Image (tube, rainbow, N blue to C red):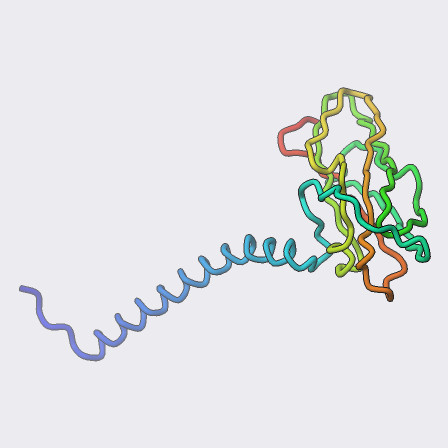
Length: 182
């Protein structure tokens, strides 16, 4: 039988166990925050995240009396050898009507590359009213060496977009997929 542990030592052991439990709980909570934050952003439009799936293409009334300017921005992440740009940098749209524009991407390297475009809408509130019907961002894009192509985006702005929002910016960052050359 082991000798009894003095009361002070038992208190120290209890404190150490509690501290370790708190540290483990903090790490677990930290890992859980990322998926919870993504869900929150998708539901509320916080941080300009748009829906990652095709929007409903059902007819909706077109607001002919109102125009909204939609700006397009393209950037490349990780210094990948891409050329990536919108065909137009801004258009005026009537909420409720479908519009199609294109982005151009080209693999400037001598090896095959694959990438994924991640969209963002500003102001963040507008992301709830920006509906993409067709978008190259829904799928991975694979490019042969030197290959370039036009990639379409078909969208509409919901007429419920608050009246104080006159300009919406759709921004894409093109990421190279891990292990995909370049």
